[in-house]
Structures are given as C-alpha cells and as structure tokens.
Length: 277
Length: 287
Image (cartoon, rainbow over all chains, first blue to last red; front, side):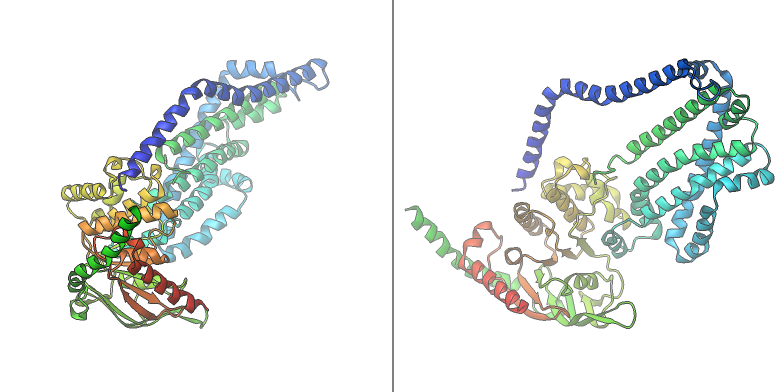
C-alpha cells in the first residue's frame, strides 16, 4: 500500500520522459510560433511608420523616422550618460523603498498599535499625487539626485508595503495555531513561517514598484534635474530634436524592461514554488 | 469451493475478535485518573459581534486512555474542531475543565501533535525540513531529530522523497508528511482534524492504513475528527458521537475489532453492524 505511491511516482516520471522525446523538435517550433508573429507585427508597424515619414505628411521634429531613431539609440553617447544617472536614481530609490517598506510592513502587521500609528500616515503619503509633490521636493531638496531618489522612493514604497503586509497576513491560521501550540516565539514565527510565506507577495509588489520607479525618476528629472534620460528628453523636445527624444524613450523603455526582467528572475530564484504550492 | 472458503473466513473473523477483545479492553483504561486526556463537563461559548452568544459545546465529558484511538463524529458545525482546539490548549472552555494526564490544560500544550485537513507544508522547505519544523521551534537537538525524521518518513513510505519539494508530492503524500511532522517531537497526544477530508476516496482509504501502520509503530493517544463512518470504525478503539450544535456527547461506542486492522474486516458482520448503527444515529439526528 505504502510502496504503491513511490512506484506510481516513478510511472509519472517515465511518462514525462516518454512525452518529451517527440516534443524536443516541436518545442522549437512552438517557440518560433510564439516569437515570430509579434516580431512580424512590429516590423510592419515600423515599416508603415518609415513610409509615412518618407511621404512627408508630418514634419520630422514631430515624427522622426524609425531609422533615425535607431541610429541615435546606437550612436548618441549623451543618452548613455543619461541612462547611468536615471538607473542610479531608480536603483537607489527602489532599494530604499525595499529596505524601509518591508520592515515597516512587518512592524505594522505584528502590532496593532504601530499599525494605527503608521497606516494613516502611509495612506496619506499615497493619496498625494507624486507629480504634484515633485516641484515641492525640488524646493526642499534642490536640483539633483536627492529629489529624484525621493520621488522614486515615494512611488515604490506603497505597493511594496501593501503587498508585504498582505503576504504576512496570508499565513494559514491553522499553521499559526500549530506554532502557537508549540510555544513558538514571535521571532520564530516571523522567520520560519511568515516572512518566507510573504516572499511571493513581496516580489510581486517589487515588480509593480520597479516599473513605477522609472516613471518616478523621469518625473523627478522633468521638474528638477540637469541630467538623466528625462532631462535629455526634455531638452531634445525643446530643441525640436525629435529623433533624440524618441531615442531617449526607447532607452528608457529598454531600461524598464531589463529592470523588470531582473526582478522577475529574482522571483524565479527566490520563490521557485510560486503558483505551484 | 471458493464460496465456502470465503464463508469460512468471515465466520472465523468474530472468533478472532473475541480472542483479542480481552487484550483490547485491558489496554483501554476507562478510569479517568489514568486517562491521557479528560474532558470534564466542558462547555464552550463564543461571543460573536454584539451581544450574541453561540454555544458550541454543552457539558461534554469523556476521557481518552493512553494509546487509545478515539474518533469524534457528528454533523457539521457541532463543535468537533473546537474540541480539538480545547485539547491543544488553544482555547479555554467557558465552564468545565480539560485535563491532560493529571494537569489541567490552561495554556498551549507542547506535547500535542496536530494534523489538519490541509497538509499546510512550507513550500520553501524540503520534505524532511518540513518534518523538522516543530523540533526546530522547540529547539530540540538537530542531529537526533534528523534521524528521527528519517525514520518517520520511512514509516510513511516517503524516505525516497526526503530532499524533494513538497509541491511535487501528491495530496496523499503531502498529508503523510504532515503526519510525520506532527509526530517528530514525540507528542503524547495526536490531534487530527479531518486529516483525510480533502483527499479522494481511494487515497483516503490508503491513508487510513498508512496511519494505522504508523500508529502501530508509534503508539500514541489519538483524537481523530472525521465525517466518514467507515473510517471511524476502521481506525478507532472508541467512537464519540456528538449531537448538532451545541455539541453534546450522544453516545460513545466501543469498536471490538481485532488489531492490527485489515481491510478484509470491512466485510465482517461486526464492522457492518457498527457502520449501520452509526449511520442510524447520525441520520435519525438529522431529522
């Protein structure tokens, strides 16, 4: 009876192995089927865009040619010094939000008193539109890194603290009863049950936060900065340099995608059980 | 010929029962002073929002002898789970007293192992590390505990999967890990709250025998909440039937089937009589 379970497991392993043999070839086909159509669609759009530019329907400073934009992306060095500044703002602001948001979420979920002290403040900061806050921050913190980092921190902080708190509250009451019945300390419960259980939530909060972080950095640069991709974008449009403005947008998007990909990879490493347990 | 043989087997069965009955009765000490767990006139009242009061248990009294396997069966919402929480010291009765051995249960009780309807394993831990969780919380010596965890997993037929991930196991296997986890700190009482309720019928039956096998090796006092009549009869020394809310003890039935139990016993008249009796009790109550 007991032995039947392992052997049935072996059978399923066999089945998987057998199924995968003929799959090896068709898997490449499946990947091709998934990748080729969207690339094809994108090429059509870019081609149509290039044609419209050639017809001269719009002036080049409004709609630059995709080929010009591509050329700028690969050749304009100022974009990459801008990228370095913006990436730094995003990483510092996001990192601070993780370092402050996660511990604060732990405090808020473990104590009702701390929750009633901090939660209204947290909600209040969230109800303020960050775009409106940015010019005020410039007055307080001046032109430079501090303003941008603060805006990034403020936009990242809320999804992180909310998702972390949700994750910490998601533990099964039965499991917590079991820990209580074994007289587990608060620290043991947090370290062994609550925190690892909240990790999937923390990481999905981080995924939202990292995309917001790029937006926050650009807003911060719009209102008070003399460097970064947002600043480059602003000056390029002021000089009617459409190709550079679009190139800055392309680089910003690429950065956003890469950062999101890094958080996503981190999720796969730290939470391999996500969606399966 | 074959039919005759079968008839012989079934007529032999009750004789074996009688042989073992004496030993079973001696094992089951009804004297409350020697009991492993005693419920003495326990009444449980929940205060819900406003002034509404909900009586969950009403003057429940019974005792469980050391190493006895007792099932609790009754309609939904009759306070079966509350009863287990009281035994674990996770809740306090409004009136009456719960005793474990000779001391009153007033605080969470460490020498209790708990199994729930869901396995509630931690997916970030390997199978064996899940089993070791209570030992870690209780700060028991790691080396000895790891060996004990391995022995328990072996008993549950899971030694091959000790370093595996829990989410790769089937539901029944996960629940077996949960049983090992409940036993790792050598508790004096095992509290099981419908542990097989979420499993399919075939796995469920298989689990009953696995549990019996483990119990045969690691004799423990067991309080087992279930909805399944045949499961209760197959596993238990005694069955406590609770009434609808507020839960009261309607009847305590002794199961005089030989141990170790085997699935063939389901065919014996004794088994079927008990099942029918329990069915009658639970149905007549529903009306």
